[in-house]
Length: 362
Ligand SMILES: *Cc1c(COP(=O)(O)O)cnc(C)c1O
Image (tube, rainbow, N blue to C red; front, side):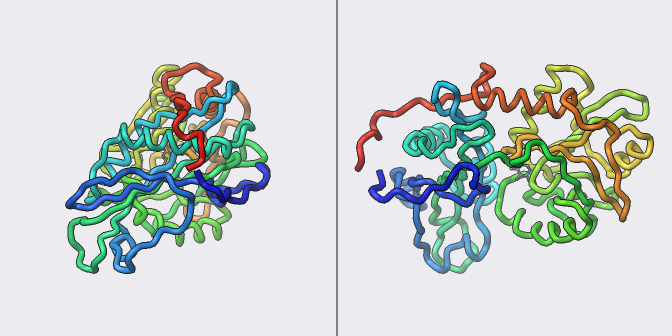
């Protein structure tokens, strides 16, 4: 363990991903030897060859998950095997080397256990975990990957919104396309994210805080910034449906929160749960009929993000249901948070076994 602990700040001052914990996990790979021994090191700079593929060709992908402390002081992860599975799928799409997801999860558990004192105890607080894999292949030729590295970094984080459940507005971006069929929208690869920063500025200019990405002449709805999107609507036949874009065309990131919301909605059976291609015109028509009841985004960072307006071609469209605790999205949030913090006993919550091997400084 590190002899030089890093600076901490009061929980209330935590932003998103600004404070790194004392330790990080590092695993190196090369094509001849395969994966090297995992190492847990003091967090700090990583030296790479200036030709490393990640710098020039964005050969990388990442994950996002959280560790929570429950009332008994145990550390919990939420469906972490889904993150490991997705990480492997992303790595494969980026021609990065495969790895054993269960073994990586064990390494992550060890890291989380070592730095568990960094996890804020208050409700709404947690420790965000950022696994990343990238090609360190040290030449400029765009070849198959010859060298790679996995890092897992941890940062204590506060509630996404300090003042509670605050709805945001979206602006439909018909100019910049986030993802398209045959592209990489369904994997968490850095190249999908950097190019969306410009769209963020346009959303702000429209008085919104995130872009709603669409593509094609049908303006199929894809995602809300870096969240999956859900609409609770009454369809033209008056049937209540929770709809979200389907994963079929490869433009949608298969969110763990998205999947969890779909499974809960199916179990609760208050409405039909539908995954399908959604032309924006269909949503616009539902708005015009007064049939859009609720809108929300989903993702690990915010869990559920209420959305109370969508700006399209200069006009703002709003859901008809006023915000209150009986809303589907509020009940989904309470359930998911209850599972994540271990208040609700549920197989989705994974208790990190405490390790004894790491208790003495090394
Ligand atoms: C990470 C991510 C999500 C949410 O996935 P979760 O597993 O729920 O955190 C949604 N959309 C995009 C584009 C993402 O990168």
